[in-house]
Length: 388
Image 1 (spheres, rainbow, N blue to C red):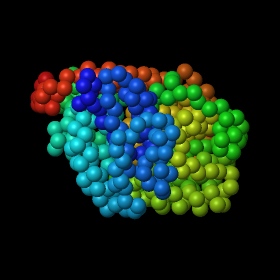
Image 2 (tube, rainbow, N blue to C red; image 1 turned 90 degrees about the horizontal axis):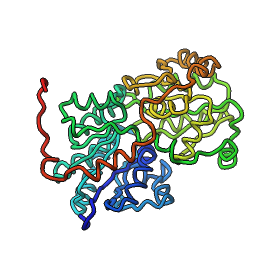
Image 3 (cartoon, rainbow, N blue to C red; image 1 turned 45 degrees about the horizontal axis):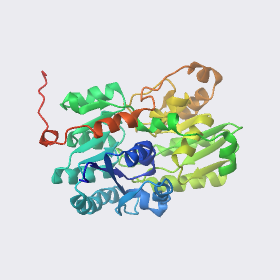
Image 4 (spheres, helix red, strand yellow; image 1 turned 90 degrees about the vertical axis):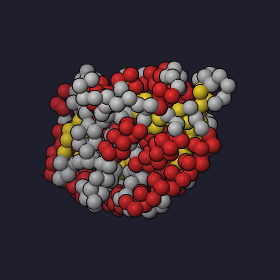
């Protein structure tokens, strides 16, 4: 521990969680009482997914360690081995670093590695975005495991906070902060249509759909719901923009199918990597988001952006009125896209609020991280009975 400062290590493993952590990392790096140690691993270092560590470097956030662990496979065995490789690398890194706190976010499978290492090394863990539900992905089990392995919790919604407490976590440990990704809306300058056009050769004055679709990791065949998505998109008019999927089993198949789709539908584009500002700017200017990403649930509500959520992946997650759920069926997806694009549906969203927060999550999280007691009491979790 640096004299007078708390050493707080933060893990980022993908472009998605880095987008959520951006303002929190900026504030931690500038905080006079914090010694930030950012650990980068997973798809950040993978050429297949755009080597997104370069984005962190451009943002001038200091990186304390880089851990190569992502296997360049497209299987569940590769995912399982990635956890093991990450565990080995993190054991050395965290064993040498010995931070006062380790901060993790969300529910990616590779986050099991730092949580397990921290548990063995008696490093207190703080976790962001626990208490949520996504029944159609292994993320749901990962998220709950991280909750029970953590000592401080930051939830996005009031209901999520109650769920964490219902898991027998002591209420004083559980803080409703809001989703930190929403801080972009308040603190970042988003791009205009003209700026997006100049940077990415896009014409956003015509109808535009943004697709954010990932493998459904709870299914043995993780891409089986994708058939319905691509069939519905083939029958959809307008410009179609695709974001790269997560680095889960089946992601390579989805990337290949997307490229094949665009070969026959030139009125579209695929982004290997979108920085947070560009992504949020697209949410402001496109007509509809389609897919199964948590972003379609947590972030689009801030723009009252009509969203078609497909299939199992986000089943059970809290959602605002801008989200239309579609079965993994081409006809149902097409029907929901038509409804989402209607003037009546968009008009019905006027004045809606986002249940996931107000853009002040980072300051709430930092207040707790810099003041929570670092005594043995933080590590010893008291068992709460069902009658308390």
